[in-house]
Length: 113
Image 1: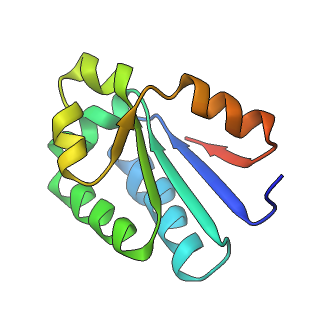
Image 2: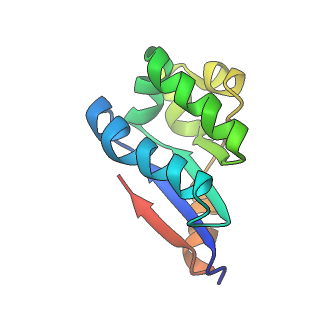
Image 3: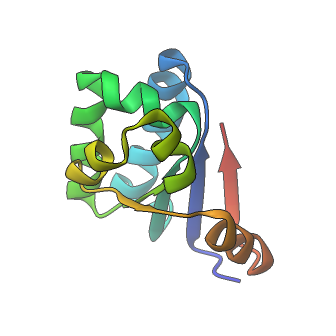
């Protein structure tokens, strides 16, 4: 188990959830060194929201610049037709079932929204 690593699983299509919790905590967790390694996983409706919202896209660029690892579920983003768009934001788009299972089995700290 990596005690200094955080995985944030963002599934909500609600912008207020994104801005008032997910993005605020994820970005500050890395900037303020609350966690050494931070990963944001974009999954489900959040992938559609991110593809449509330029404010959130700017925050993703800021997260990337801070060294936050960005991943997205390919099965979900393919369903919304946004996989290429997310890749262009610098997000690693891949099938996430096995990686998420591995994170859980490794005892990673995981927050879900």
